[in-house]
Length: 402
Image 1 (cartoon, rainbow, N blue to C red):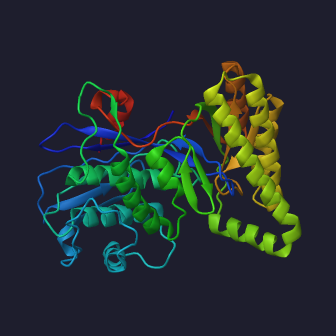
Image 2: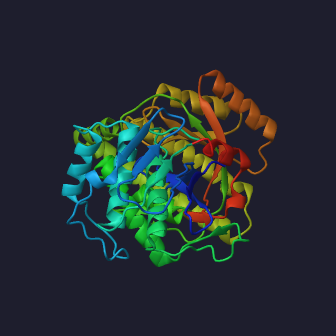
């Protein structure tokens, strides 16, 4: 299981990391599946306005250092840090873009991550003293692969900076406990600020990714409404990255064009996708209220196959995704694309009884095609605070280098 890790270190408290699992969003489907990623943010106090803030994104060679005084908006007032935010401060966004030196709409990963951090940082701490920070970000899984990593990043930033500013309390009351969860009110505040980060990065996001990164589990997304599912089973999956780059904007535009060109043909396809999602939700609910049987997995596998065929009809498939489906089907496993499609990543459902030798053989064959694979799970928790002892030693060693 991969995770986003975030840690705040101050002179007044012990360091604590925050784990943020995030959903990956199957294209045009109300039922969303979760994947876990990882990053690390470290801050150092006391607050000194003219000391630099350092932002590092290992292992990528990206590092930014700047005195925050040059971008502080004297009129910025965030005295009510508990108030949820809805809209971006356009003037602050303009100042930050000029400060970072970015133009146009196509920004690289480091620039987008830097802008999101600076915006949340300056907004949360407001016009008062700004703490001097060293921020290190690290990920186990690739960015830009349709896995919701930007949302997990934004959720972690919001959680850490709101905690550091005192806007939300630490949920870890007892340091002997490995994890702690914020209350519903605090999670709503975290989610609202994470959405700000997503707007910085994507412009007009749906809000689904940051919501599922905040609350975890699974969500129903229908007609613009996001509703967390109360109980979901933990499902094993194989996550495969075909390494084929794709543009979400181009793929979505292609689907819209096809719908406009063939409305009488595409409307039933979309209705069927909706029915697949509703059936999937029903099966998942049954798996939490009664003993899980092989028939539950039989239905999920059939739904995966039907959904993948529909996505191909919509024009978001790719030969590499077809290869993924063929390789796994030969092993008795069922796969579909995830994210925007057109390459990117796919998921493969693993039954509880699937032998480890089958998984190893499948992974090896997919790697022979040049793909990357990870075994993980869906249905995990959302943002949490973790005690230092709960972080893997190998991850801490990597992060301590920065």
